[in-house]
Image (tube, rainbow, N blue to C red):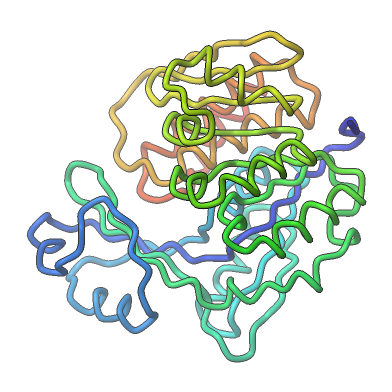
Length: 327
C-alpha cells in the first residue's frame, strides 16, 4: 500500500452550489415536503421555492468532497477539486469562490446544463430540509478522468455519492491510484451504503486506504451499533478507519490501535451542514502533513465544531484563524 509522499489533497465529486434560507416550519409545511429529508427536484422548482421566501439566501460552494477540499485550502493546504459546472452565473460564482478559498479548480464546463444546486431550508431547530438539483454535475465523464488530474496528490478524497455512478467511481479511483495517491472514501450517507453494498465492499477491500463513516453509515456497512464491533469491521481492509459519533467525538483506527478523539465543547450548533465534510478536512490535512492520529483528529473536531456555528458549510476567516492556531 503506497504512503503519502507529498501534501496535496485532491477531491472529486459533485460541483454544487449551496443555497441556504432560514424559514419557519409553516413555510416548509406549505411546500408539502418531508422535514429533514432530501428531495431530488428540477431547477425550476428551486427557483419557485426561492420566489416564495422573503429571506435573502446565502449562496456558497457545496457538495461533500468540495466542502472537504475548501476546508483543506483554508487550512493552508495544497488543495484541488475536480468536477463539472454549468456555463452560468451560479457556475462562475462557484469557481471564483473556491479559488478564493485557495483551491485549484479542475472544472469541466457544460454548455447546456445549469450548475447543480442544493437548496437547504433551515428551520428554527437547526434542522435542514434539502432540495437537490444535480444539473451539470452528473455529466462528469469517466473518459475525462486521467492520472494527470491527480498529479502530485498525497490523498484523493472520493465522494461517496459517486457510488451511484460506478463507472465514474472506478475511473476516479484507478486514476488516483495510478498517480500514486492514497484513497480516502467518505461513505456519504446510510442510503448510499445500503444501495451500493456489494460494489462498496469490493472497492474498499481493493482500493481504499482511509475509510470515514458516521454512526448510521457504520451500522449500514457493518451491521453493528457498538463502536468496538463496528471499528473492527471498518478497519479490516484499510490503513485508517474513522467512526464519527456526533457530540461524543470520534474514533480512529490505525495500526491495530483505536484512538478516541474528544469533541470540541462549546455553543449549541446553529446548522450542521457540512460538519462531517469539514471534520474530514481537518483530519486528512493532518494525515497528509504527518501529524499524529490524535492531533489530526483534534483538528478535524475543531473544523467540525466551527462549521456548526454558522449557516452553511463555509467557516468564516475569524474561525479559521482559531483553527490554524492549533496546527
